[in-house]
Length: 185
Image (tube, rainbow, N blue to C red; front, side, top):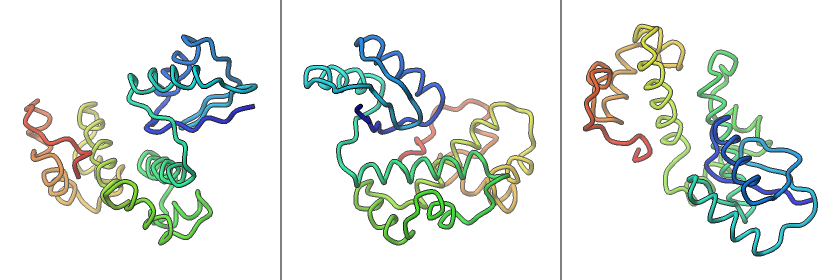
């Protein structure tokens, strides 16, 4: 049995995309989840090269080092924290420690070394992406979105949103395309 660790998987669509790539290559799997796949038996080097090509086309990357695997776990913990804010009212650091079973300062140092940005900056970028989704749905007010995403107020959300994207939430909703990508935070 081979355990594959995959970088940049963030949602159920990513899981489907990985399943499609494995099926395209004729690689059987017994499990696929965010950031991982279990393959019965061994994978040949030629299959790994072909898989790496498929993953690259999807915006994914195979993880080879234990340090990179920890960073991916941190990213998944941050996504869990952002997407499940109602159930996860812990501080981000406590949430990460709970999910990884490692001290936050150790994980934070490793994350910064590998990613070139802090966990906090990554967290803010993910929160802003969540805000964008909620804004585009158009079913909630800015204050409701602030509450859903853990901001203290709509004004605080607006300030951070403008800092990250270069647009106010209203400008974003109007469809201007001059925004900065949140991953540059």
